[in-house]
Length: 179
Image (cartoon, rainbow, N blue to C red; front, side):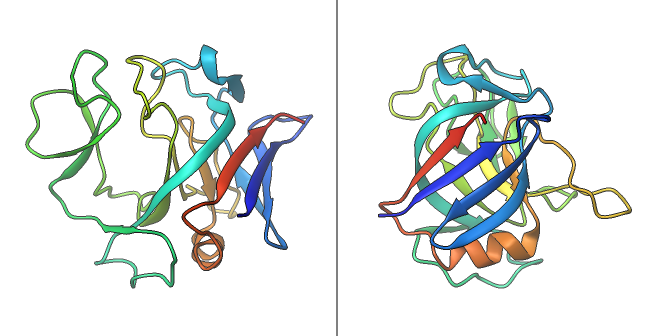
């Protein structure tokens, strides 16, 4: 079992590094920095500190070839979303569209969900309002290539996620820490 450690930078908690299995990869966190898991709330823009299982990988087949991966893998389609409706029984779960509650589309135009991992934050059990859709995904970048903070997820360059997926195993854990 590998412990993948995301460590937020001391001087800017939106910047971080991911280490494990001999890899060290730059990444970005939520625009609001990091927060204790118990203090996480839906829409706060913060990445939850803590220890989490890595549930599964995902990819968008019209933009990415299926990655080499040891994890269960979800092939995205235009009819998939992630429920972020705190009042809905499907909160923090993958849903089929059309859907009767609030959701985030998994088939995105911006490329963020072209490749990634689903993190087991607030999913066993689910507590409505404590945050949903915490993923490791492709970072949005500036024209100069600088990675931009997320809405609470962990984001890396696409090539780095592809490399990471070759090493992540189903029993691995993700640790998100402040420096």
